[in-house]
Image (cartoon, rainbow, N blue to C red; front, side, top):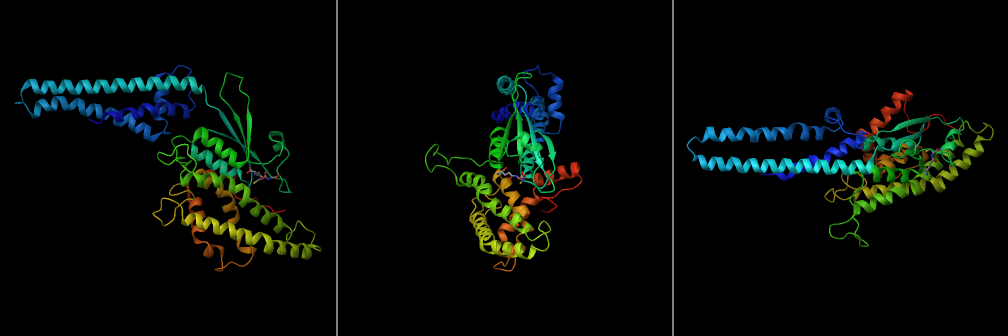
Length: 384
Ligand SMILES: N[C@@H](CCC(=O)N[C@@H](CS)C(=O)NCC(=O)O)C(=O)O
């Protein structure tokens, strides 16, 4: 009888409690547990702990009288022995389950106390949208503080009070700790924020690829391709790709109303020169790299992957989403493309961008902003 799987729910329970912000240091009452199972936040857990588990016990409970009814002529001693064997197995399993739950709850109580508080400082039309997506994907309870760009497109000075650079995204973390004793700290830089949040809240999700190949733990070169891609993209997105998108936004402004109309022909010409000499060739090089990465992504049976590290969404896709979605509507006008349009030139890349936009987590993050702001746009609406 496959009883060993019965321990799995014992592992899920404390995780579910922690995710719902229960302080396991405080005494846990039956209503707390009922709350966990009926909250709708952990449907799988509810199914396993609340329905399947009792159902299995019930079925086996009925099996005993049923055996007597179906085989009335079987030697009484054999049936009785089988009953006793089954009962012994059931009791041992139940006991193991209770022990595992108690040990894990105790361990959790000592380790987590209360949940840390996460606050995202979100700026309109900014990379903060990717962090919002990640928080939705991780199902972490969070608070949103909204900031609006000034007319100059710069962030408002209030953000400087949070971090000296005054940019967004920023995340304030107030660790769980003794009442009134927890010192908040601030996370800055998209890549670091993503890494930190995944380290603490990513367990059990597939947002960070497995690091080591089987049997190659700790060895140079023992990393999986998925993990190498993941790490690369965390740095690449901000360090290499994003500067060209940023340049596009800034240089395009030289052709717009931010410049007095009588000097605009000159600034416009200079802008076009920089775009054709520096910006467009580099954007093309980046798009070609990403097209190639998608074509060779592992897990797709040699036919490429749906996402940048393979077949499923990772936090690397989330960090990449901002430059790609922000650039999507702007790159066409930068100049000539080999096959007429960027979409035709880099078809895999643009299919990937559409896939990112169709992700539930992305849509949830956009809806969240629509709910608060009444509107949502990936890039700032007003121009310089
Ligand atoms: N490298 C930083 C860049 C942060 C950044 O420049 N954020 C932009 C929004 S996407 C910003 O705050 N701009 C307003 C300003 O520069 O004042 C990161 O990845 O978080």
